[in-house]
Length: 227
Picture (cartoon, rainbow, N blue to C red):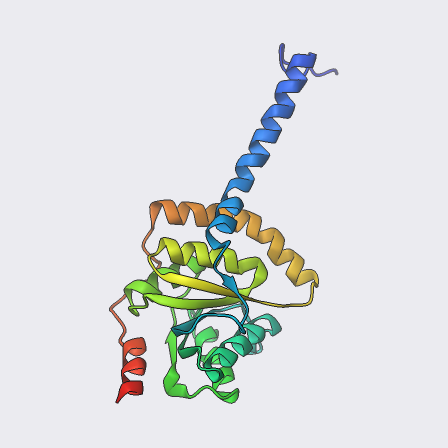
């Protein structure tokens, strides 16, 4: 049985042209959020060597293996430890998922950092950083962070910078290097779709999944340095 083509759609040259134009328009619209994250972060990306000195370095969670940071997360933490050792960050805010008892990203991140030379009293944990937007809003509203260097992989750092900027935090981003393996390519592909959610978050500013009371951890850690 033959399918009847809609008159004036793909059954004619003009119809096929309109179909191609519709697909092209949809493709452009899909890429607009990614273009936005790149535009916002364009002049704010640094390496650990040329990152500006800030009071706070903020590390986003990136999964655990058997209770320990994945290689991707370990590289983020290595960069944070380097910023601390070189005096470019006074406090490290680790933000990640602790939505269930057996999965605790912030504590695993803290353990890794202390093993790599960052004192425990210079590490502050955000246990409700369930996604990038939540982490950015909580950094500002719960922990009182006004300026920070963000640390993540290159494929994620632009979105992180754009979202924290939208949340009202003055930020720079350090994108750590990684082997271009299947995880890296997956992350890069996922960002195209994640950028769409990021644009909606920045536009509508939803409240994080868990807000809770203000936490004095960052101010207390910074205050201890001046006493």
